[in-house]
Length: 265
Image (cartoon, rainbow, N blue to C red; front, top):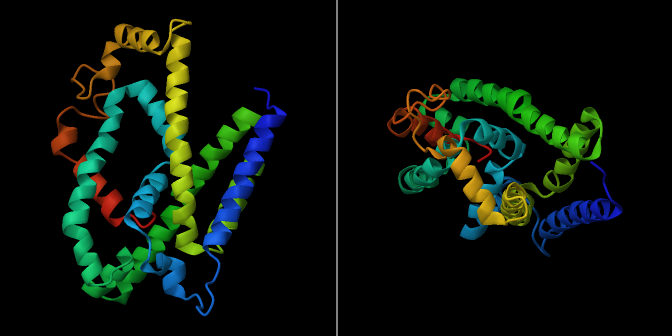
């Protein structure tokens, strides 16, 4: 794939704009000195729409853009069970769990475990999840992102991971949660619109010049099994998403854990 000058210019504008916005929203107001509440909790001043956008943006990363897209290609529409069940999970979390967290001023799960048990349990939880985030979650996201850059621009994987890490630090380390949340608003718009454009373009190509709907009809006609939301036992991917068990079984536990107790969400 050949990268044009216009592509590089647009990418550079995006990077500079994102860092600039993050630094601008993080500037200190006259007469107010930043404290830990400002840095880690954005001064408890984020509006609901910024929190909602940040939730979506935090959930969409290279794991979803590359990993879930690949799973969707293999398994089909049933992979969307993770996301549409998340909509119900968020209502449960907002209705029943969030009021408890706010009442007791609980901002992290280790903090909750300290209140419920003692500081030793808090320390074990903090060290364990810090290791998981650094060596599993963050590593996977950086590698997948670098893989995309390598495929598109031919940049070495190691340099790609270094760039992504430095870029993320540039707009998040200085500004804290407020900078992350405000830049998430921009990113979620670009991600959603970009995903819609990519889907339209792909189906348009499949339509072989006959248009978007022709491509969609081609896919539904030739691959009807990919549009099953509930997989039957004879489906080769049944063990990944075992039919109705997904809706009434373990995915609820995973979703509650991810959306209710996951620190980076």
